[in-house]
Length: 369
Image (tube, rainbow, N blue to C red; front, side, top):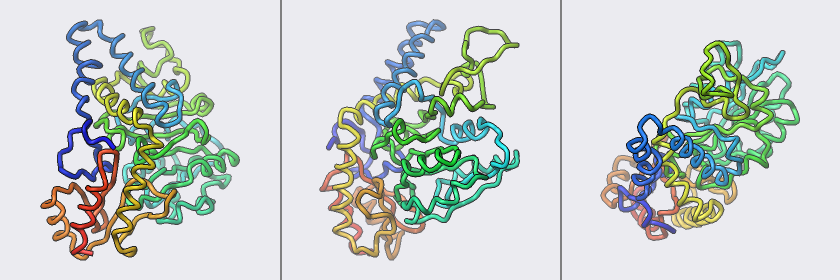
C-alpha cells in the first residue's frame, strides 16, 4: 500500500505492534514544529509550539473519531491511565476497578496504585472470551467505579466490543476507560459514538509517530466530573495568570495536561498522522485484514494462537513454532523483522507490508510449524 513513505529497518518489517516504522518526513516535521521555531524565536517560541500541539490533536482527532478539543497530549499511556485513575470522583460503595488478565502489564501496574486509596482490582479471565460482551458482566455491578477495556489485546489480537462495553457501563453508572494503543492507525475507532468516558493511546505503534507522543481523550462531561491530582500550570484555566494562590481546572481534557509539555515528539508524530490520514484508517484496516487472511490461509489452523475471526481481530498474529530459536534465526536470515511472546513468533502487518512479505513470512515459517 505504501512502502516508499517509510524507513524500513528490515526488508520485511512485521513489528508495528511494537514500534511503527519511521516516516521519511519525520525529521522535517520535527524541524518545522519544534527546532526551527525555537532557533528562530528563542524564548518567544511558545506560540509556535502551541500550534504544534494543536496540530497534533487536530491530526489525531479524525483518526480516532474524536474532537480535537477533547484530546490531551501525554508522554505515555501509563501516565494517562494514572491521571484518569486519580481524577475520578469518590462515590460511595464503588470500590472496584475491573480489568483483564490480558491487558498490557503497564495498565495493571498503573491501576494497582489505586489500592493505596482503597480500591480493589478485579481481573477478568483473558483469551477469546473477551470478544463476548457478556464476558464483561462483572464490570457492570453497582460496586464498580471503573472498567478498563483494551480495543485490541497485544498478545491475543482479540478485539474487545468497546462500543457495547461503554454502553453497558454508561447504563450502570460505571466509568469506562479504553486503551486503543494497539488499534489507533490500523483499526477504526469512533470515540465520539462509542460513549466511553476516557481513552488512552500512543503514536508509537500503528500511527508511526515514535515515542513520547501519547494521548488521553476525555468525554467533556466525564472530564467536568473529574479532578486530576497530577496537575501543573498547563492544567490551569489561565496558565499565564501566574498567581500561585489561585488554581482553576482548565475545561475539558486540557485539565489533564500537567506541567510544561514536550514538543518534539508531537511535532514528529504529525508526520505519521498525515500518512495514515491520506490512506484512511478504514482502507488500511481492510488492507491489513486481507494480508492476515492470506497469511492464515498458508498456516495450519492449530499454529495460530491469536484471534483469527474476521471482524474480531487487530493487525497482529501469534504463531506457534516447534523450535522458536531456530525459527527466529531463519526469519532473521530472510530479512523478516519479528519478535516473540509466550514462546511463539509474534508479527503484525501494516500499510508498508505487501503480499510478497506475507508469502515470504509463511515460507520461512513452514519448516518449523
